[in-house]
Length: 578
Image (cartoon, rainbow, N blue to C red; front, side, top):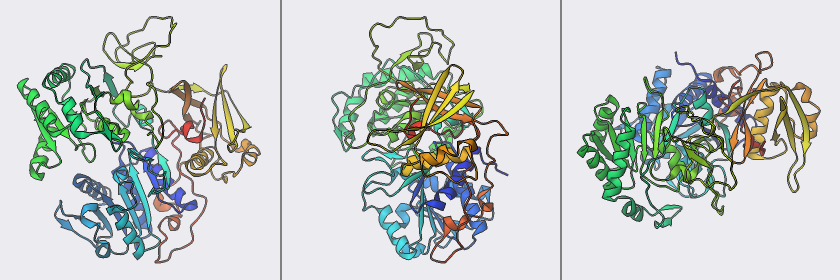
């Protein structure tokens, strides 16, 4: 029997908690390789076993994801009434109670699909921001059939290149983030493979490449990057760094560029194949199967393998595609975070300057429309092993090299960033104090100050704010006072601080010029008891209420707490810095 990880259970419970008090379309954010398929399957099983008359539709755009999600469902619940509607998979089981479908196959067939109570959209970041798209038209048609339809989005990257966060903006389909599992915390907890980065000598120059619709112009980018001398140099470096690594993935800047990269690998005796969007299905499946078996050492791709691609053994990623898209960058690097036997970590070779452009993948935040450009975070390169690490590090985490003390008279300028932010430090908490914080022109917040020896660290809990900040504040409160109503004001909170459990430890890590609190640990006697399985929570009516009629929701169920850094509350989401 499959057992959910703490953050997976917390994600499911958070969905139920969201629909107790909200009527919007929430997002659930789980990093690549974090097990979104299992979260969906377990959530659906809970819904259907408690409410057998409900109809659930899981929609995505990639054939491999449709099959993967369906397989996960059957693996968890062999008797699940599940079917597939996908032209690419040759199945049209429109009346299945749990239907896994491709949007391309069903977007004009809402009437055939019929009454649906709940739609889960996998890889939700790929829905265009415009109000008139196949997704929007299809969902509108389903809502015409059932006005009580509920929509949940799942993604590893809750932002889009053209308009920032998926739940912000005039035409946003989604309204809130119900739960987010930070990638750094999952790596530190051992649920995802660590990422390491080395500084390649070869750099792709895109200084003269223009942009269009927020990203580099594809034709100009390919012309700038696809140069024989650059390709030879990059491939030589990949081979040198990958000597002891088994499974390489190269993201390229164009179809011809990928072919030239593969040809150069071949000339140097490395087996490499190419995959593109128009690669025939049978050929693509055969190539991927051979790659996973280790018969092909490298894949060079363009425009594919960023979603729906599951090859746990990937232990080297070469970024040969510069991009302005933070989401694409995170998706590319995320292909290396799956765990596999014998895999210690995944090496990221960033020839494209994407780490410098966007920052560590666990701290990526999209630029909102109208935002100005930001500066580069300071880093340095280890002289012994070429790892890219934070400038403030005194010791290389990869080889143990100890940096000599230095005097800084002029602020240094850096050229690159580490692919992961520095690891968080755990500090014992000796005391906690609470106070009201007033910000000019803004809403008041609850200031929480932790004493850790002679040093204090603070965060700001935005109980009187709206939207995501309020949700995170409510989550923060429930972890410390399970079963107690979340205060609506700072004054109300200050009157109840005696009810709050005090964390035994907090974790902190650098965030720009500051330190941020990134996680909490509670002593067993002080930590709230995790919520029960969704099928037994008793609040399903709040989630699946539809035009068919359903009982009134039961109140009082709170999201499960992780008890560790697996699901830390990021103080930045609540408006605070240390």
